[in-house]
Image (cartoon, rainbow, N blue to C red):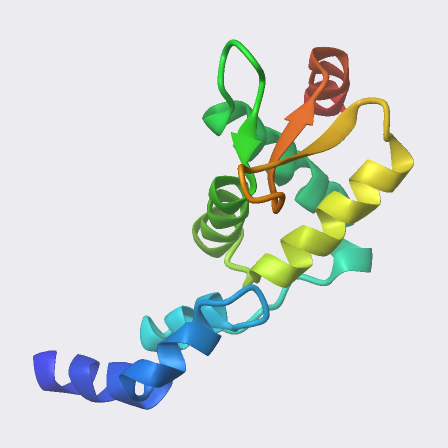
Length: 139
């Protein structure tokens, strides 16, 4: 069993330099992890799964946001959404899909959803108004 898991891991994740690409926003880490654990590959589709994506994004935002400033790191939101889809919904969701959904949310409600940059000017944080969060959680 152990050797089989190591063999599968090496087949899915390859050599160390490949990990940078696999773990990047454009990578397919969760798809590979699903194959490693022998989950069925049922990918999240932005159009079909948008309502569920919206709920998972808001739920993840609420669980990681700062109480004072309502800031949440985008990486934490992305990871939680992808993990929740994998384990709660048996679907594969990648960071790029979450990014696209967040961009759609932002375009639909710019006054309620805002991006914030880190010290180097890179978009890294998200804020959502409490009214927006409440409305999404009720829907």
